[in-house]
Image (cartoon, rainbow over all chains, first blue to last red; front, side):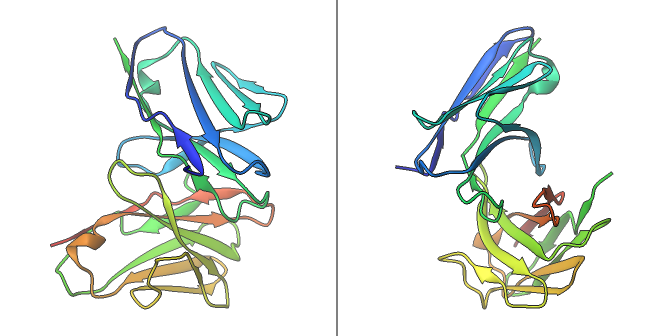
Length: 111
Length: 114
């Protein structure tokens, strides 16, 4: 089993749609979790951290289910500019020294 | 603006030559930097952890004699791909960690070996 697994997609959605991505991780002792966004041929950029209680940042909502070992990202009212690859990242040790990256889920928002 | 600068952004080199990539933290000191490699449609793979003033810690399967890492100051780490071959063509990304364990990524370097 991979340490971090994501559905690679691609997800093709119309503007304004709501889309959800899931990510599962294998190490139950993992400490912290993140969603990154990576545009084509660019470096990844932190979208948001994922907290146990769930957290929201504008149109983006992240949730963590430790019991089932999965993380989710919900994007509401999709914009064309949301088109990118979304990377699930797990920090097994809590000190950011070794981040485990998912393969990413590709999202294309269409007009 | 970018807090971690990586240079060059693009480089094409001949097979057998060496290429150096620089990673600089612009407004903070980074005792720890990380070097990743990403092949097309694959996830980021950590190559090594660069520690200021000491030897880098390489991940399993990464040849330390081929990928030379030097972290001579608190703001600069370099990765040298020695005797590069076409299979080394990839996207190389560095990141730097602040004292508070926040990670910032460089813009990445595209290496093409011909």
